[in-house]
Length: 57
Image (tube, rainbow, N blue to C red; front, side):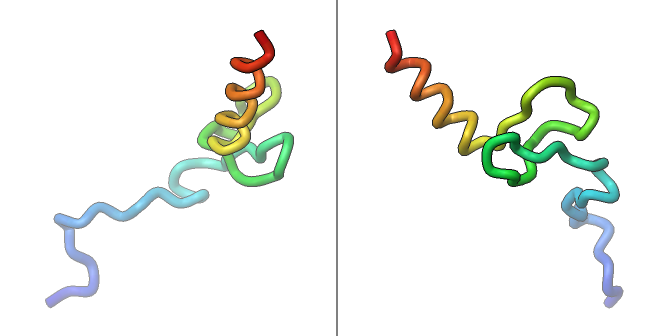
């Protein structure tokens, strides 16, 4: 048995998937590449921002 099974994909890491942008609010990594222009938000902050905007009328 080998240490690496070809049928099991390896999860992407920062080195294989490229650098990720940090959230401008909390500093957590986002789903966006570091080359993304503008303010990037992590999924949690993105959801919270959408909730604030939805309730503001």
